Amino acid sequence: MDPGDPRDQRAEGARRPREDDENYGYDDPAFDDTAAYARGQRRADEFYEDPDEYQPPSFTEEELEGLDRGGGPRRFLPLEDEPTTLVARYLFPTERYRGEWKRHWIHLTTPISIGAGATLVLGYLAGFLTRQNIDGMVTVAVLIWLGVISWVAWRVFDWYFDRFILTNKRVMVVNGIVTRKVAMMPLLRVTDMKYEQSALGRMLSYGTFVLESAGQDQALREVKHLPNPNELYLRVVEEMYEPQAVEARLGKEDDDAD
Image (cartoon, one colour):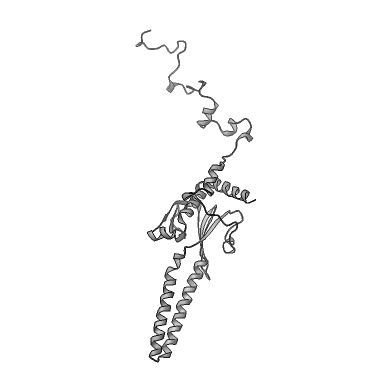
């Protein structure tokens, strides 16, 4: 047979073209069960004779070591074992607590500066008015100063009760002394997350978190002055994308404590 002559499709050893044969290549020994499973044609329970033979993903000691004891930006600070009484009331029983954070002390810069300035002004006015024999005005100045200091104390207490909370299901912000405000966002609805740090924020280790969700109305979008933003960012991202690694790391820490 010349190379240019058409090949007889009925001849011995002849095979139909790939586009005409739905089972082309499947009888080839190279196409074994492993390859079929890799193409998604067989489920795990069909591939393994014993269903118990399949094991879920596991993490090695080296991988976990890099999460909780390694140096560099991947290092995590230890978490509290239990939430404080301030936070526990907002968690439901099946929710796993991951941590809570107060805002950085830089959040108090404005009220403390105002309180310090008011104290300096009061000292100057008290001396000046006393020399002028205007005792009534000194009393008024002291009352104004007490009002400013009361406002500063209120802001400090408000800062103390202001918490950013992370669980395995959501992020929350709880604040307020008399009127409590609780804002939350499910982790499943977070479509984008970033944090911003100014030059001063990088020096003092604080930043602003910006959370984007699938919904238009967002009860929790921007959270300012959070401490250790890089660590907190990694915690939230790990909780969103590697929850099994979080459980394995926390379980390893419990075993080491025992």
